[in-house]
Length: 278
Image 1 (cartoon, one colour):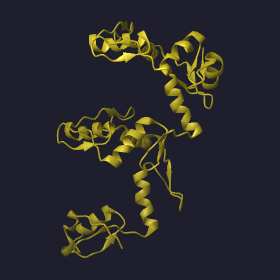
Image 2 (cartoon, helix red, strand yellow; image 1 turned 45 degrees about the vertical axis):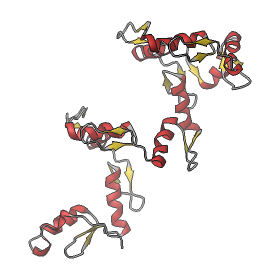
Image 3 (tube, one colour; image 1 turned 90 degrees about the horizontal axis):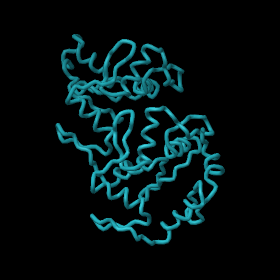
Image 4 (tube, helix red, strand yellow; image 1 turned 90 degrees about the vertical axis):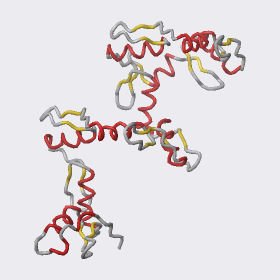
């Protein structure tokens, strides 16, 4: 059965908690859920003393201490502590995606993935920075953003010690040390260290040029190419020869300038690219 967001909430889960609006398929599940709001936590972990409102939550928790993982995937042998995680994992193998977006009909493995996706349609941004008020559609984006205020950079390169605010920036950086290029073009087999660079490269084969200049209509395969082009229209010349002071719109033009035989005093002047702030 394919489940859309509205169908799921209104039909499949008709019993709603009046305190938190969480919905359930059976009234017995709702009654059990209300124990969470009562504050009563009679089930105590014998290993660490943590308390729980439900015995099932205690059992799941104690597996952290015992290492027990009773749910085994028949496809790959992976094991899981929780049945919920196990069932969701199995869908990776079966391809079953029961949660359908009613805006675009994309399908998802889990309800949480569906809810995250639907914010791209609704524009909902429920996660708000308490420091600057900026809002985000995903909690992970807020967590990363908060580090811009705290200065925290918890992801450190094992090779040089350089640190980053998010793990997604660490992995590409470490490939500059290892030389690893895991992303391969399926047309010409050229390899790349970053998936983004592969996608830009593939436009060489497809001819796609999605970045268009608003002033002249010229199109480019990469956003960087468009930005370099737009400097021509702006009249800015940010690349300056530190010998004669002449400015250029592109770094390549400055390099050519330093190589010209007719300007021997500027030859080799391109070791430092000075920004022109005038």
